[in-house]
Image (cartoon, rainbow, N blue to C red; front, top):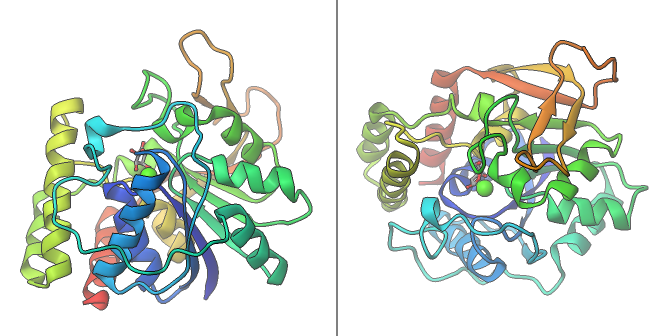
Length: 300
Ligand code: BDR
Ligand code: CA
């Protein structure tokens, strides 16, 4: 089992990442940490605790940093950052220790993979504080081409480009699951059908959340089926065989007039720079959803 901390900003698709990380047999979920992104820190932290209550997830939850610069994606996730369903009261799992301190302590005790599905603010703060610690980092964010928050920038990177730059220049083992691969993780009607057919309270609430997310994606991006981005980063750890990755140099645009927050991925080696990340490009969509739905079923 891979020891994991999930650093997230729930967020509809973050919920699916939480459930997959909690229930997949290959993952030993040690803690959930939160970061401002899809909403301010207090909202996403309460959302994480509500999801823990919903799914019976029993790990420490630590709140992280309330920066980052861009913040909030209410057009996609609603005012609460997780609109569309009646979630239970938050679980009593919040610890006093902050996200960075908790992750630091776990790393001191042994190897750890950080799966980050929000802006990389907490992760960068950890690396600044303890450059001697060597986590593996798998993040959802970036893109080899177009963006979703500006024409070329994906939301998680746009929200804190300096943090992403620090992670990508850390020399650590870094895996990027960007829009190239997460746009293959679409929730098509058959996914809704399979979720509804489970007839559990959790699956019913997930269906409501996914409906809200689908409608927001349709309104904002005109996409018929919403891409459920964040669990792809968990899949990269739990079942790496489901993804095709390439090694490539990735830079973050920090100063571009129109392109701040874009990830510049040199897929063809034209810069001559050494690779600093494994970049996921393809997903076995059918097996991905089989895995996510099996995890949800396992949680009951
Ligand atoms: C990312 O941005 C957020 O809105 C989602 O939760 C996901 O992590 C997709 O660009
Ligand atoms: Ca997210």
